[in-house]
Amino acid sequence: MFKDLNPIIHSQLRLAIISFLVANGKSDFKEIKEVTKATSGNISVQLKKLEEAEYIRITKGFLNNYQHTAIEITPVGIKAFEEYVQAIKEYLK
Image (cartoon, rainbow, N blue to C red):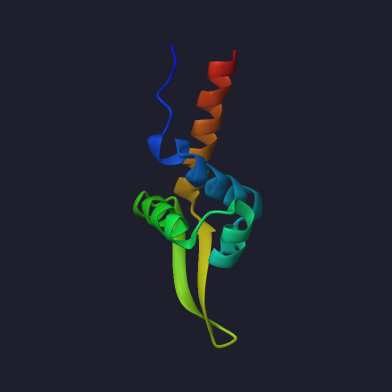
């Protein structure tokens, strides 16, 4: 019947982040904060969960002498998102 929805992706903020990354491939912390309108602390927590699930890759460094956090979706993340979308489609039938 209905498949369970992926609990990692099903969170509203994590879904917004992963959807944005699917569309753009990569981003950075500042852009994700602007797009989601979430707090830095909440974004950090959600990024950590996505990283632990290996859905994203986080690279920290410096850009123009400022701390920079680059975020990139992984093939595992793309596959998980596609499966999530397919499960939602099944709910809508």
